[in-house]
Image 1 (spheres, rainbow, N blue to C red):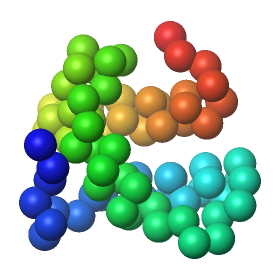
Image 2 (image 1 turned 90 degrees about the vertical axis):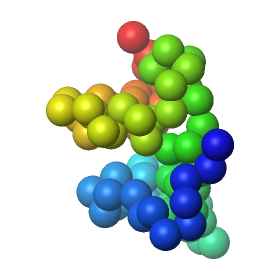
Image 3 (image 1 turned 60 degrees about the horizontal axis):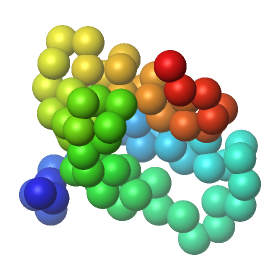
Length: 78
């Protein structure tokens, strides 16, 4: 289930994704907001097959989603 088109990811997450891509490879042509919207709407096994968007609605959700994105950059998963 996709997010509504008028829902924008939190800027702090968009900036984090852009930073990760810039540090990890070639950011040319990469749209962090578009990628993040798709990722937020997709069930993630590490979140018990819940969508990151749903996790964001919880009190500590932003920190959990940020940690997941940073772990994906380093390739380490708990």
